[in-house]
Each structure stands twice: as C-alpha cells, then as structure tokens.
Amino acid sequence: MIYTVTFNPSIDYIMVSRDFQIDGLNRASSTQKFAGGKGINVSRVLQTLNITSTALGFVGGFPGDFIKAILSSSNIVDDFIVVDEDTRINVKLKTENETEINAPGPHITEEQLDALLGKIKKTTEQDIVIVAGSVPTSIGNDIYENIAKITNETGAQLVVDAEKHLVESVLSYGPLFIKPNKDELEAMFNVSINSDAEVVKYGREILAQGAKSVIVSLGGAGAIYIDNQQSFKATVPKGKVINTVGSGDSTVAGMVAGLTSGYSIESAFKLAVAAGTATAFNDDLAQNEAIKNIESQVEISKLDGSD
Image (cartoon, rainbow, N blue to C red):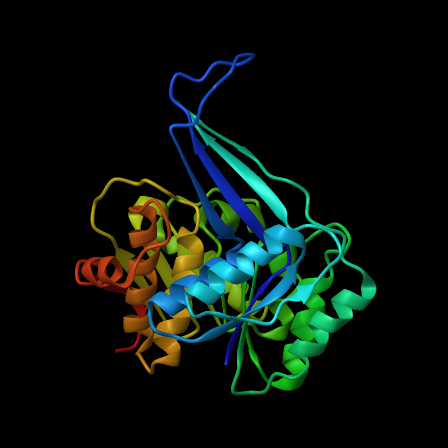
C-alpha cells in the first residue's frame, strides 16, 4: 500500500474577481473549492493514474468533512485522525495578480500525533510512505525524522517532498527519493547552480548523505533524475503554464506510480515529469489523458552512467 501523509491539509478556496479595488465592494466572477495539501495532491494524481493509496493526516470540523467527501467521491481511501479544531481554509484571490492568504492549521495534541504515528508503525516492507508539505507549529519540526525512524524500522520505503531542514533530517534514513527544485537544491548547499553537470554534482552529494535517488525540477527546462549509477534529463514540451500549485506533487505521484507498476527508472521518470508538466498546464491537477499526451512528448537523455 502507498500512504500519503498531509499534516496540514486545507480547503483551497479560489476567487476570481476582475477590476478588483482595495477598500471597496468586490464581486467574484467565479469561485472554486479544492481539497488541498501536498500529500492529498499526491493521492489524487495517483488515483488519476489508477494507483491506489490511503491518505493519512489530520482533519477537523466542516472543512475536514469536505475534504473527506471530496476524496471519497474520487474513490480515494482516507484514514485521517479527526482533531478538535477546524481544518484550515486558504483563500487564493485571482485578479490582475494572484494573492494568497494561508490560514494557520488546527492544534494537534500529543495523543492525536501518536495516533497517526501508530498507523505508520503498522507499515511493512511492502509499503511506501510519502510525506510532503508543511508542519503545524503544534507538532514540531522533528516529525519528519520521527517518521523516517519508524519506516526504517518497519521496512517501508520513504519518499519526502518538503523544505530544506525537513528533508535534511531524513537523509540518513535512506529515503527512496527526494524531490527538490533547483532553487531548493541551491539553498541546501548555499551555491548557485548554472549547469546540468552541477545539478548532478550536488544531487550526488545528497546521495552521499543517504538518499537513494533525487529528482531535481528545473521548471520549464524539465528535470534531472540522479542515483548512484546513472542520471537522466527530461526535456518537456512547450506550453502555457497556468498553475504551478501541485506540479511537484504530481511529479512525485508519477514517479511512485511508475515504480510500483514495474516501470524502468527511465520510464518512471518520464511519467513523473509528464504528470508534473500536465498539472502545470492545467487549472487543477492533471487528468490521465493529459498526462499520457505529454508523456509521449517528453524526451529523456542520459547524462551519465553505464548502459
């Protein structure tokens, strides 16, 4: 089983308002509500790719009920811990520009956190645990490392997509892969990266710290996959970027979907990049048809490694 962990899910409430004026009455021309959170996004794209997962995390109040209902309507299984306070609602205002207001998450008690960790302790070497996104202040930043310790003991494979300090805390536990973008890779080593060779160089420094593989997103320039034996670059088709939210989560989902389906590393990476690109070209997370269409256009070239 694949488990996705979202500590601080949200309802993402998108409001489109033309001719917006500060200090005046404005009306929205359209609104949308999505179940948000990086782990939830991964589960949604996995389902699009016909891969089953279970969504873990914390939900509360009517926003939590909404998230559970949305996942259920998409045939995604959840095993959330219900908390006392409401799940957050994030507002994204689209005018001539885009403004986001992210709410704080609910308070998570020690008992609720222990309940979540208890579910992860039941994983086995047949499972993959994907941990992604921010951490509520009531939990503490050692939670990623604590989960890494648990999966290291249960034998489950760990995938991590998070900020620098959270990623660095799990490297010694041998995650299956991590997915920084180029800016995050530069921040990890306090350098400026100006070539594919430098991406591979610093990616391999992450491998030396314990990760089994690394996927580095290059935005419109594609992505690079690195492990100890080889590295590949994916070049993506040109298109209009509409939505970068969820693109990285889609990349994670595509890679995991490929690996669990028995694809070669190269083919799984191609699917990963296609999923991330398809989401970037869409208002919401990409659907299967769009992913497959872009997958046929993604070009993979070997940067180094044996044939």
